[in-house]
Length: 192
Length: 164
Image (cartoon, each protein chain N blue to C red):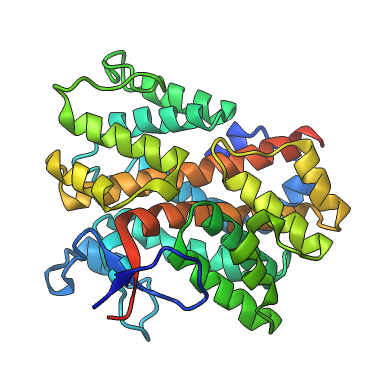
């Protein structure tokens, strides 16, 4: 029996869709084309099969997502993951928060930072650079988004340059996008 | 100026921000392609291009993003003076009960823009009950999600550009 998860966790839940995933066998040519963009070595997830209802958007999604999270140079990978988590915490997307907190933990080799963020949000006890990035990401994710010269200044004070600020903006806002799909078109459940 | 976000945010053509965007030009191009897929798709399904522009304009106003509010108001006016008969691009107007389909969509747009954390299965149920098919539910969700991304990127770029 599966149970809906409401608390932040780094154990990645199962995602249960509210919309019927498309049936691959019945997919239109445009849907099949869009689904080709997803990695072929893994089973196509229900999430991607739900998004395949709109193949024009899905076709672009994988390259944009991978580029924002993994393209070389600029902001360190773990700090891009931190931006993703900041958005997911504000939007309470338990699924995205779990996936990206886990990636962050794997990169830095420590789960203390994410544990504290899940427990205390903005009040987490963090080093100044991590705290500034989290705060920027959370303020940007609110509605209306909060971003002022002081917000940019607080990132520059802890050493981020324009490239890093742009990369942080992209990873944070990308998750404002992903959260709005994941958290509304389905929900995280435990077990099977 | 080739893409909507940079134009709306009035990004300077030289300087550190322009260089940073240059390094991510592939991503900015993919963002522009996502804009086309969300606002100007070749197969709009049951979500007409005019309706997409109306909702985008409404979201831009909710997020107080001036450049994109202007952009979407222009896009909307390009569809003619009858494109938004209920003035839904204005944030405090709501469709009458005689328009259940539009009313359900506007509720979704507002909730998922303002407070996505409060969305639940019942909000998708409401769309379904208003006779919106599953493909159109995903199209609507995709539009709202993309525009919220675009609005925040524009917000940061316009603040950074101002200082340069």
